[in-house]
Length: 125
Image (cartoon, rainbow, N blue to C red; front, side, top):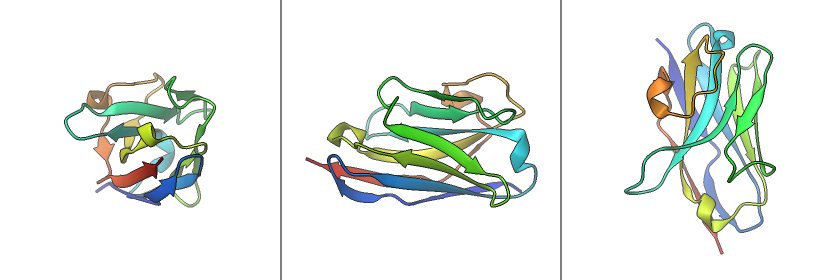
């Protein structure tokens, strides 16, 4: 049984930084490409960042490219999202997601196999 648990959200001023963690429990963490999405009330879940399971290639949405970094620590079975230069428009619930043996960059939430429960990020102006 796979379970993803996000942590690290909170309240930060504009220009500040946060690092989100996504802890994996279960098997085969190395076989999953990982991604982060975010969602605000009344809006669809929005793609943020993706990391391929094989080779570690990364991809970002245009709105966060150059400010956010996705990574993972395989021995610790944890994925991360380092967020710098935060803006009020980054305020959302952030979710991590896992995609089994995927070599494609999926930006639709429908393509992911497992999800965490989400962590709130609030950026004040």
